Image 1: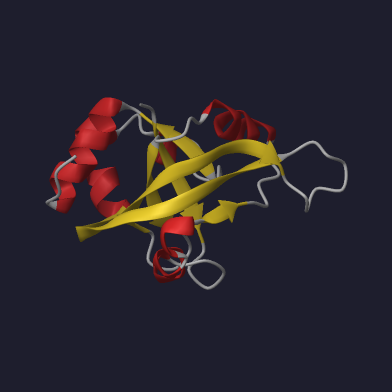
Image 2: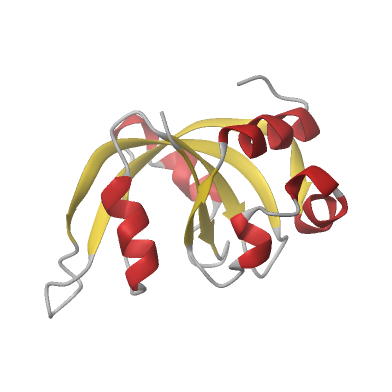
Length: 139
């Protein structure tokens, strides 16, 4: 299983909104970056990811799961980009802030720090475990 990080501005789509979508989940659309598109194409059903509030909060707040693999994003008139469907799995016991991530030497190579504008990012197994540890959560 691969791990990912999904960034969303809480005023547009928040963790609470993701939770409210329930087991049917919702689509993760609107990605218009070719590298992020490649990440979406690599996702498999059952992969898990961190839900990150960007701009406001700047923190990882929960875990989501891919429930439908990449398919065409109908909002893309050129037919180039894709989306996946995600459902909320669980809220983290403690959010993990961007500041905490920056202050953790073991996370210095995390995509969140190196590619801060990328909306969908890979997370290594080691990074996944470290963030869960910081959040007081279990895998």
